[in-house]
Length: 90
Image (cartoon, rainbow, N blue to C red; front, side, top):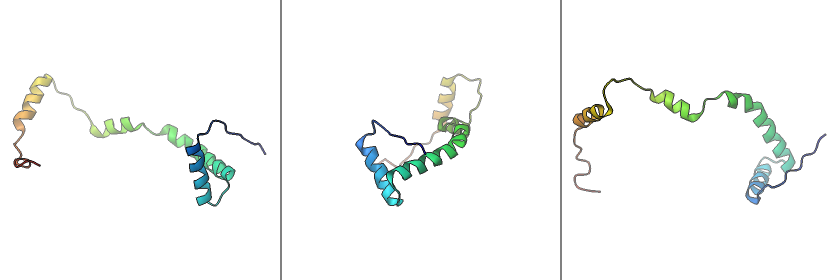
């Protein structure tokens, strides 16, 4: 069985891993092996996943309009109705 030594790990990460290992009733080495196995099993799915920005763009959609931006903004402003929510301040 192979051994792996990790160098350059900061103290916060080490203590977080140690705490997680204790919570899972594992040694630190066992916990790292479990986490690596889980990550490697999920990696193909993660690589196929769309980036969050692309998901947001797909949800937001888009439209085509031949009008110049100024005309669109003018239409939006004209369609607004005043709100009385902050008439008396905060």
